[in-house]
Image 1 (cartoon, rainbow, N blue to C red):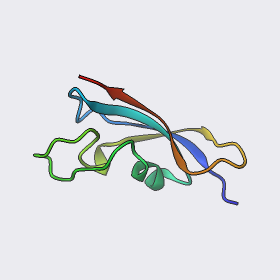
Image 2 (image 1 turned 180 degrees about the vertical axis):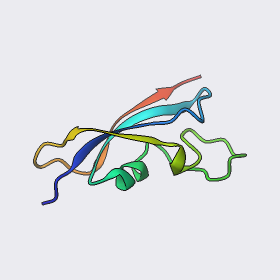
Image 3 (image 1 turned 45 degrees about the vertical axis):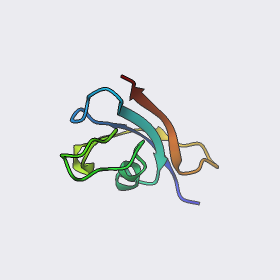
Image 4 (image 1 turned 60 degrees about the horizontal axis):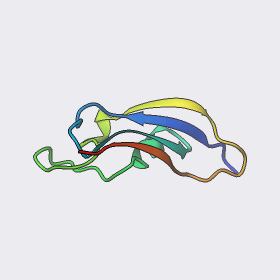
Amino acid sequence: MKKLNVYLLSQTVNNNYDTYDSAVVIAENEEEAVNLGPDKYVEDGNRWCTWAHHRSDVKVELIGTALPGAEKRKVLASFNAG
């Protein structure tokens, strides 16, 4: 079983109402963590979305190691309702 980490994801590019500003995920590495963001990426910056438009807009911070038996998943997300 591979070691899993706990990551804090955050973004400040898309910060209107009804958007996510951050999330905590369990993943193997930073790339996988970014792909587990709280919502889909909308690469077209002209379309409305609830999360960052591009993966490169997401800050990834390692905050710990997951407990044995943990599964890859989203743990918690911060949503700013309008």
